[in-house]
Length: 251
Image (tube, rainbow, N blue to C red; front, side, top):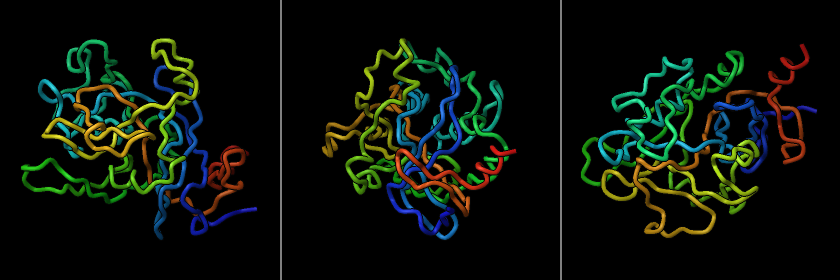
């Protein structure tokens, strides 16, 4: 049985692609955020990595458009060839002590095979900027992004919760408990030019959700998928799988 993209609803489950970082690949589970006539917007069910948001200056800056993280997420280049934009590459010296550099990692999109990447479309997004900055809000076209704080507030409670992926809980260096909720980055600025919203399942209090952009926090990437047909049921046990992925697996 096949399902058209137009029938997908917020909260439906989708399985697509994998992320490995420095470890074995881990299949990615996604949830539907929204749908347009051109694509369905997905967010990962789990936090799949921890990264520094930005490397500019001493504490990083909170402007999504220029951030180190945005450039890495949208890159499909191999390790050593990622363009990190106007701010320093996230080397050990740039991210500081007790944080993991990612300057030598391949771009996030490089984890997806080329036949899959063609279905991950640029999405026109608008992101607020810190008070006092000129030219905002910023309008960008991103294949990979993060949710804004306002998008987060409209999510059902079960989709707000950020928990580490199974791969992350098996990484002894991260010292995580299985299924323990974590905070993760939004792309929205919060305080001054350095603070970025942190998202969690337990608070909507802005004052308790601010963190400097230089910190290392969880990531739940969002993508726009243009696939037209899906197999599966859209549940946690039987997630939707894009028809093109099913066809490729059968070859």
